[in-house]
Image 1 (cartoon, helix red, strand yellow):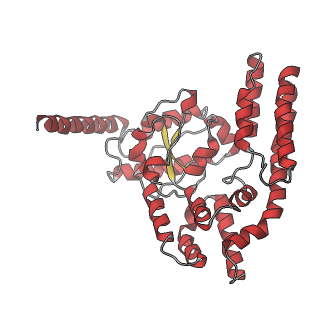
Image 2 (image 1 turned 90 degrees about the vertical axis):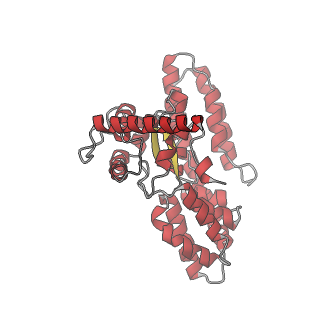
Image 3 (image 1 turned 135 degrees about the horizontal axis):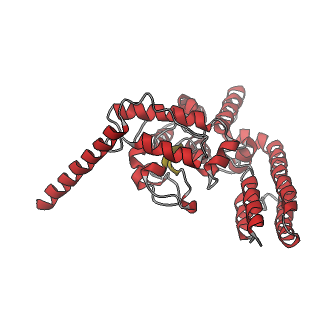
Amino acid sequence: MDYNEKATSTNGDTGRGNALKRLKNITCPYTGIRMISGSEMNRIEQKLKEFHNIKEKIFFLSRYAKNMQAVEHRIFDQITYFLDSNPNKGLQDFFNLAYDSHLRKLKLEEFKVIDRVDTKSALLSTPTQLELRRETTKCRSQILDSNADVFFKRKTFLSALDEIKPHNPYEERVLSEIKNLALFLPTSGSSESAFIVKYSRRDEADILRRIMIGSVATIEHVKPHSHGGRDVISNFLLVSNNGNKYRENIPLSAYIDRNPAIPEYCQIQMLEIISNIEKGNLKGNEAYPYKIKKTLFDESEGRILLDLSSFHITQERAQDLEEEAIKAKMGKWYVKMDD
């Protein structure tokens, strides 16, 4: 898989954000980790193929520990400790040993979210509430089922919620809140137990790849494309693959409720981007800090207010630089046409 091409948001065209994806060693504004580029991920996968045993691979990946997301980092530390303590064991042995206890923990994590959904459903009309309860009852049955081939699927439940139609604007708001609650259902990016259960059947290459893939830099629509967000750089943010996927189409203001450090991380990223612009690494997009500042402020309902006081390029000068870059590009295009 070429992450330069495919590790982007699945909704809308993010091609205009490619300039951001070329930046290196940038902090994720959603999770606070230093992201890796798609090309770096490709190099990591190729390098892993050169090693002959799991210990060599783990030792190689340890240099990227600072880039790993929180869940992946904890799993990686557990794997490292297990292999150090059990020289004759392999990666699959770790997952086999951890599987049963984490499956039980995962079921309880899922039940907690379903319980919250059911509690919130009391605000719906009787017909809508019964329709929702039918779906949550199916979920409970699947969660309790001991048959490993009938796992509860988060995605299936989220899709079922989308099919429930509100009878009035009030129910529409309640159902929207319920869907946001359901997004708390554990994933391999938010729960150690979900990670271990999901990847217990995967091969070594898939597991090691998964430990790093969540840290790949992708382009995110600040205002979700499904909510009318445009495919323009003023609506694009460079975020990690995990942060992008876990947010889904939740409004940014609601996402901050789950991750209160987002405004701080956004400021850290902006300082890094400003540094890159002043080094000439984002030519043609010098006004990006001013553009994204407004978008983040609007979509966060005022909770993200970037400080651009360290930026030595004024907004007027930044706009002039962008216009000069466009004219230069057009000039090259005309010359090419003449040729």
